[in-house]
Image (cartoon, rainbow, N blue to C red; front, top):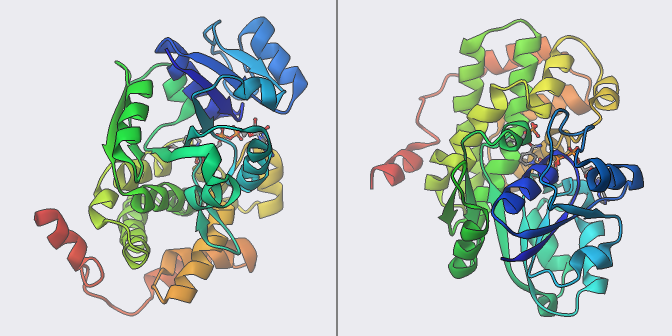
Length: 345
Ligand SMILES: NC(=O)C1=CN([C@@H]2O[C@H](COP(=O)(O)OP(=O)(O)OC[C@H]3O[C@@H](n4cnc5c(N)ncnc54)[C@H](O)[C@@H]3O)[C@@H](O)[C@H]2O)C=CC1
Ligand SMILES: O=C(CO)COP(=O)(O)O
């Protein structure tokens, strides 16, 4: 049995804490809001984020970070990308031994274009961390909490640690694969949220499945182009954290990114949408990050560009779709040829 501190008591942190508790580990869930933490300890529910779900009674919750970290062999970071630096800085002041840092958040920092594992490397000193392991894949918290079959990938530069984390989480309803491609896994998980926002928009505009399939496949082409330019293994994008997560996020009402896009497509403003969500919509900030990254590196990302114009420049969503449909003609595989041949190897 391991002792694991789960930092972030939202939907995903709570669902992953349930998986770990089901596997017999001692789990302490850390959150900021006293009321919510009391609810978890007293009633074993977290109704705001996972209504109707009863949590394993072995999960302990606390607002005290030092208590959460006490004796923990591993730390699971699962706060929104925006909060990663702040939480890591706090962690770094408390830790006095190396621990395995697992993260399950999906985003890229705007301004720096850094992936989450890079933020962790910057904020937590080497003396306080063994390995950094990313957990990602097609996994809505709502379904994991119902113990519906789910598959994810853990990635790390250190495969021995990745396999240890695989063992921590793997069970009959939560199947965990390993991958050494931390760049590809993080890029796929972050960028699919952009495409899910776009898929929500086309649904909100009243377009159908053809438009969504186009966004998923041409979105994947954009993700592969950017990933390849920054050193990802392109094969990763055919897997759970690439195509798998695109499918689950673009086609599900559980997705906050899809839901936000849907409201934008129906004519709501970005401010209105974000005010009403009450949960994180990572794709908005990730669009900013990907837009700047693509421009800096010189990678063509037309869907990202149009979504950026809708979110931050007031472009009408319908005009954005029209712009995508009237781009210069292309050969379908001209930018993904190497990806296809990599897969054939
Ligand atoms: N919900 C899901 O199904 C999945 C979510 N993710 C990722 O997990 C990450 C977290 O998402 P969710 O749990 O869904 O978000 P959420 O919106 O359900 O909850 C976010 C939680 O983070 C807490 N938080 C925010 N800022 C904080 C800070 N500075 N310090 C401490 N706690 C803070 C909030 O109080 C809240 O409890 C995101 O990057 C998301 O993309 C990944 C896979 C599935
Ligand atoms: O990452 C997710 C599923 O794999 C959850 O997506 P949303 O953040 O859009 O809800």
